[in-house]
Image 1: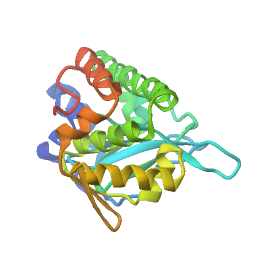
Image 2: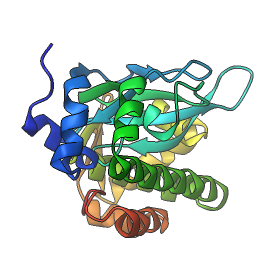
Image 3: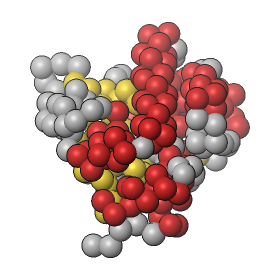
Image 4: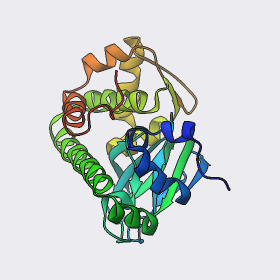
Length: 244
């Protein structure tokens, strides 16, 4: 399997903004995969052996178990601005969260050991990925605050907006039941919320698919949490987070 092309590397903003010599350290160790929605990138409790970089419309998310029945709640969404896996650790440590593909598409994979060697060779690369770790942690903090304080409608609008901006596509596969699980609420609450968003002309739905019709309208409806994350990314890693 050949390494990624320059065009494929550019599909991930975290890689696309690296210096040429740092990209050259990573490319020989990277492979390209086309993944489906629901593919597991890492499981909670297992060693993190890989780092995955979503490209273009591809998107992944971290979920954590909230009960003995293994009910999962999403804690952060990651698209072409970031990565999943060993990028935020030193070595193949056990994962606390499960990471799965949310939006299908192209992912670039590098082994954790190869990534660690590249970070040792380049202090710039090490600092750049440390900055991303800071931004990822900020997303987790903001999500915790959002879940505690904001309404289901605000949180649903925030998730749909994040999906659109990260994937650069206004249509993505997801059922209402899956959205309810991600938000940690009952299906009936999500059904009412989706009906409200449809009535306002913000979204359309068909079986297993959400279609965003009015991104600006969703932005006006959701809480300020998305803006807070955008501002932090812009301060720490200017040019990486997807623009409106």
